[in-house]
Image 1 (cartoon, protein in one colour):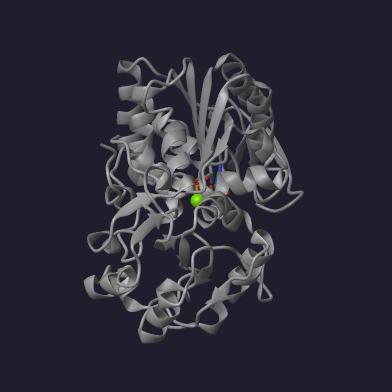
Image 2 (cartoon, rainbow, N blue to C red):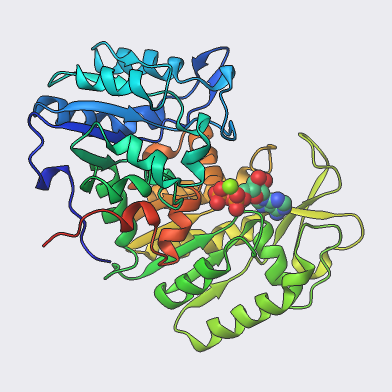
Length: 395
Ligand code: ADP
Ligand code: MG
């Protein structure tokens, strides 16, 4: 991966800067319920304001599909941001246009304002060139700190860079550095853990980790598809029938690569996917009928934990069971504890896994938590993310 310029490599004093952040936060009764994404951008904001820049902040929120939606205005974000920064944050009711240009014109060094939800404009998601030009027009520099949206080629993540120099914010820079660690010169043994619902979402990442890692531990619904490909009848478990060939081919690749593919040896099964439903622990060959595998079992946890205790680096995407419904979060919880107890450096990505770890109070045990879901997966797939590609290369 080519090195990208960040705000640390450019002069910002006296400049007007368009800063694309990912303020796509959950709202509840007109308030921000979880401000983690806002806090993640604070170092970039403080750095730029302290160095005398004037900031125009822009973000999307939810899926308003190109027209204004009163429930998705960014006012709650402005309010929370002002509290966190301890300075006033002016919020505009438009994204672009004459009023916006005027407000930006009057903006002074050390001040900031927040534009309205970018996705109120059709041109945002269609990466309309004229809309991108309008966004860029009143500013001198574009800073992209929205890693979670970097896999989308939208006007505010990619299009603007045609009209104004573009560099990474501190969060973007950190994401690139941290997520690259397992791709370039990983510490060994490198243990990768993959879970989540489907193989089909993650085929390329599975292949990539089979090339890179010393072991690939698989759990979640994804493991069911692999076990089915090995010929087990998994009863009523979630698995992808149309992916059995692909899964067999991945198992074959693993046999040829130096990576050990580790599948569950026991599974927690239930007939009713509800809290407190009746459960049993079975080896894959004993599952049948209307039983569904919804978590990894204790023997599998033991095996996974042994690998983690010997690892030098751990990367993990996707929960190992239906963590939303306790007790089917047990496997994810115990493996997270084993990761915390290991001396290995750990890197975790994926919306649902991160939510699971936060819910379990185990997020603090991770070396680095990515703010991206889809973006993190695409980064690990070695895809060139549009929002990163457009940033200036370091000389
Ligand atoms: P991430 O967002 O971390 O990448 P995914 O979106 O791929 O993770 O998958 C998360 C979903 O996978 C969760 O909703 C979880 O309930 C589901 N899941 C995990 N294990 C199973 C299983 N054995 N059966 C059905 N669903 C599962
Ligand atoms: Mg998910």
